[in-house]
Image (cartoon, rainbow, N blue to C red):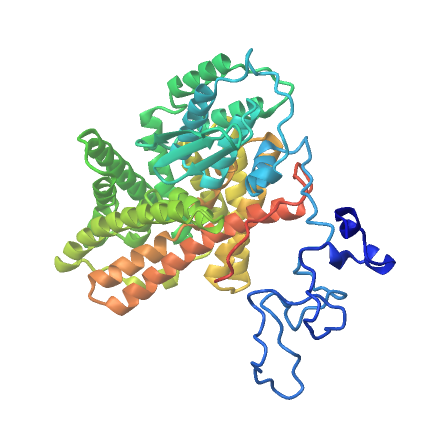
Length: 553
């Protein structure tokens, strides 16, 4: 047989049989059992032949590890599974506030974020990445030092980066450290910069100015170059506080006097004057300690002593006034409501490290106040001061006077926070509404003080968020001062008084009530803000994608 004949197919049937030329063809003479035309299982998860696994009666046969769960049905897939058409995209309204748009994009993976539009602020050859990152960190530093929540600081930093065309950026905010990373592409090395926040100061005027700068940077119709942004940022840093030191001291005294009228429920000029003088003395002593470089813990301890000393002195002199109202009024000017609200807000939005640090700071401040007041009360009880813990049960109710006192308290609190003069009136009205709601629920409706406080704080957060959206600014200036009338000053004082009189059980119960009221304030403010974003379409960015939680596993 020639070589050509050897290459010729032996039959017409073999010409169309692919097994003759396939390297996987079965040799002739080897009998292989037929499997009904199905492909052989070659997976490493296949059950070996001859190994029979026991099956309960009526159970379905067990397959490989890739077999769908027994409760899963391809025809009737539960809503928890990703649909075949994919996850619907989050719509971003262009005219929405930059806070909402940046929060929505920060919660997306980097690959799903929409590409930034053409930016008119780019310099020739593209933006200077190190300078943009430095500007971003400086803006974030001012916001974090001013008491802004970590979520809003991250949103502002992300907005600045996108304004200059840096879309693949990841900001990271902790209590004292800011960092941001920019990766131009998947094959290039990332550029990372960080900045430490060492000094903190309460100046909501400066905070509002930074928000205006970020708003202008995010506006496509506003031309702001890098040099112009640096110039405006330097002006914000150089600006002096809107209120002088003597005005802050006077505002602290008026705040304490208004708080004393609020808890006493009656207009007593002696109580008002005593509480105001004690708070102003405490404020001056705290300024003296700050000038000597003492930590804030000792500043709070020293500032809490004069109001307590004046209240004890009035009681020892048998003056017909409520010494407890004087001491409680002095405590209102010291309670760290701003840091408490910011800490709880960070915890609720998923920034647990920052929230832990803020709440630890609040705890140290509170312990400092407790130390100062408890020291004075202890010596006052030892020398014969008849301070009555049950005085809290004999509070007279004068709604109009209490509403006026609450509004004065919110106004002076706004001055202490260095707010813009244009926001003082709004926050004053917001504080009056908060106390009116609390008083109606607590005294007229006889509802739990914790529930009443939470509802009133929720309205504060709701109205504050609406005002912030209307003015395209931060919500802190409209909410922090308004919660002043709701702070648990009386519960704190009576708990400390019980401990000073060796009634530890009642003292701890009263302090636990104070903590519950503080948490109700913080959670209520945050819940009111979230409700405004959830249900109101005014300036909202469509559906705000929430962070995916672990649900405990």
